[in-house]
Length: 153
Image (cartoon, rainbow, N blue to C red; front, side, top):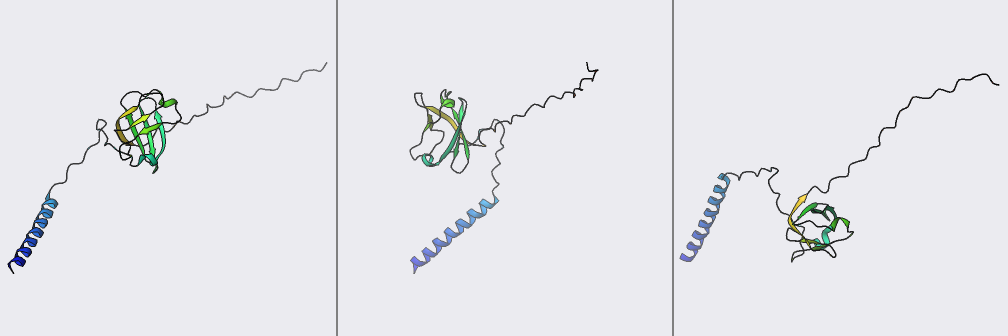
């Protein structure tokens, strides 16, 4: 009989502890929101199973690369050093993590060049849209008057 009372008492104490913990958590102030300023770094991101989830990529000159995942989400990888041959290549390879993810520890491999390692890999809005070229307005010239009719010889 004592064993049953101890078990019931222990269960009651555990339930009370959870109730007190929940009440304290409800009274605790919320953590302050993180203000995003131009100097605040974005949180690092990763593409899980990137071996099969990379859809597209666009070079940002020699300083970085935009990578698009299958879900149409864009990511931006900033390089540690300039990646000279990247803007001129049709295809590249990626160095993934041990479980196939692409993150800040990954790299871009361009044939006959050193690896282009990332210093950061964050979510992005994608590459900038190309600006539309506008046609210059057609020059306007006044209509020419027909030559005056003169006496026929």
